[in-house]
Length: 180
Image 1: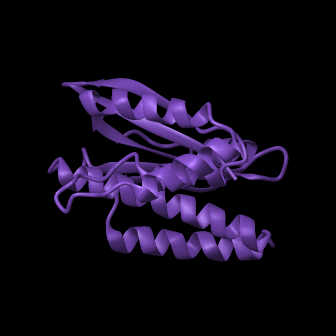
Image 2 (image 1 turned 180 degrees about the vertical axis):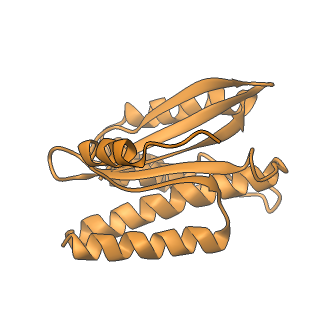
């Protein structure tokens, strides 16, 4: 392994106002531990209670979605890894970003769903949320891009942003950004 310039990495994180960064295999217990660290940081940062709850809720939703997706695809540890970043923006808000490998055929419709949600205003997101709540759900239905994603869009102070980068072998890296 080549040497990592930790000081340069630290400076990069500081310039980007990155509070928390994780890259690697993600388990239920790790989601919980990072979530506890995030809660403690938000408390120390004196974040408004509503903002802190939204940041934490978005972090949990995104990381659990990654974990469930990786399990549903029987990905190994490397393929099922997550990249998660929580940062401050220049206006004092919080940015929660998360990404993972997906099958390219799953990533395209997910990207389209995020773009559709990003085009909605608050009233339309509320209506979409209520509509999704009323939809019957089959016991064997796969989860994904439903109520949780709409909830993330509702909590976001700016339209959701997503990207899909080709990763080879029929896979892509999907990333999602929410501003709280």
